[in-house]
Amino acid sequence: MMQLGFVSAILPEANLETVFEKGAAYGYDCVEMMCWPDQGPSRKYGGITHIDVANISVAKVAEIKALIQKYGVSISALGYYPNPLSPREEEASLAAGHIRRVITAAAELGIGRINTFIGRDWTKSVEDNWPRMLEIWGPLVEFAQSHQVRIGIENCPMLFTKDEWPGGKNLAISPAIWRKLFTDLPSHSLGLNYDPSHLVWQQIDYLFPLREFASRLVHVHAKDVRVDYHALNDVGTFALPTAFHVDKLPGLGEVDWGAFVAALGAAGYNGPVCVEVEDPAYEGSLEDRYLALKQSSHYLRNFIPQR
Image 1 (tube, one colour):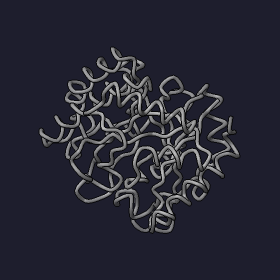
Image 2 (cartoon, rainbow, N blue to C red; image 1 turned 90 degrees about the vertical axis):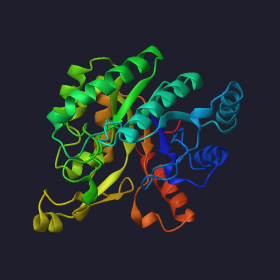
Image 3 (cartoon, rainbow, N blue to C red; image 1 turned 120 degrees about the vertical axis):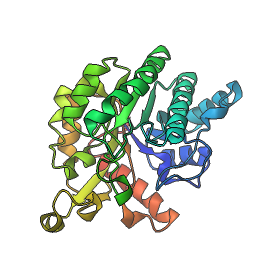
């Protein structure tokens, strides 16, 4: 049976126990815990650390497992979303090195999943990024496989500002690219952290890929999106995507969550489905963000029953 969770990035000021406490209070089964290195926020929802993977110890593992037991809320995955293919070599090297630490921590905690981005040099084509992607990700996938950890690549194009134009900062954004990715890196230690909202605004049917990529579903994000078709008709798809779409809580956008959860089940998926709160209407205060978590849990329990 699928488990309902949320992404801890929406609670940057909370300590680890508070994240677990709120998960239990709002009826969640699990939480995807953010594990950024100690370097401060790199962007909105980035730079957040609820588990410091650089300082995992036997005592820390025991402490985290005690919190899981206390609140009855598990960890769905460890999350870290940098750009390991950045053209800035220092940034790329730091990202790849920290991904290894996240993998090691996931193994030590017995979680078995991490979520991240493939990355991209946004000034180059997909084809021109490919050799470097294989050079960096081949060893990372082997490392994950040796630790019995699966990597879920989120399918967000990371194209929001003129500084990310024209290619965005993440290669793995569409079925055509996933197909090539999993052909060239066939280990099932590499898969998808599937977010339907990113497909909606790219004008891709978010149900269509689930059958073909069923075996690659590592983790799922529950985020909705509202496409402003009036604006899209005005600016076109070559505009920055923020000109014609906005992230929403599940049920407030264009995703049919009943159809989506049914399609996940038909594909044989029985893993975590974690709410990713990035709705600007709920960012005004901590109370608003708690309300977003409460509302999202209440809504998605129509499709993912509580155990």
